[in-house]
Length: 345
Image (cartoon, rainbow, N blue to C red):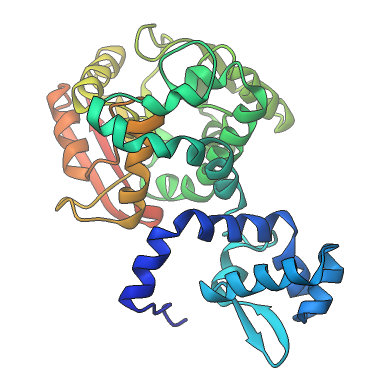
């Protein structure tokens, strides 16, 4: 498939008008436009207006905008989906990114206007847009169930797509009881328990979150091996009797100093021979990309915690070694801009 080519001036214009570009995409999803175009084999403006239940002029504006950013194409007098829309924005596609659009629209985008001030103050100023207790997004979400669902729908979707590459690289068969720190809705724990039928897995997370994991484990008929344990990862002890720790999508939340402190806590909780797996989105070691790392990092400082970013694999490895792990394995070049670093006690 050919890459999308955009002239320099148009590329800058997309950045300047980024909010509009996003809303064109989000509105297309809200009206199920891409599904309708695909099912119909393309539609004219008139047909689109009728299908969406809107007037001709709004339909024309939406189609014009989506074509201008190369998400739709014109075939004769009909508008059709581009290849990237077919890959990423049709609900039937295994690469569907709808949950990511939802979390951007509902949680992240309303706060990013505070990025400059967050940079100035080095704190998550954007949190002011969500009422509730706590100093992080994750604490605030515990009192906003509708937003918490949007958040964990996206995290669960991302985990479902990305976690298999961890299991394809790391052999869990030598472990007996693994704890998933900040395991959220239990997606990773459930997938792990399905693959390794003798393994015990415990989801460690806030008491108002683990109920989601409990329900999902019950739905998967895995309640006997997928457990939950309420606690605050910064302050509370981990479950006893564990020999493996999954530290997944946690590292990017915090400063390197706090990550090293938490990994030292992981080290202390493990027996000799135990393993701590650190798996995250990553930037490159040169600090120049990827686009995923560049776009995600402002979210962590503006909203999530006020101190994190998408770090490099070098950062992850250095923190694991500083926490005391004597043997370290590193898996670079994973899909979805991820890396896995494993420390053994």
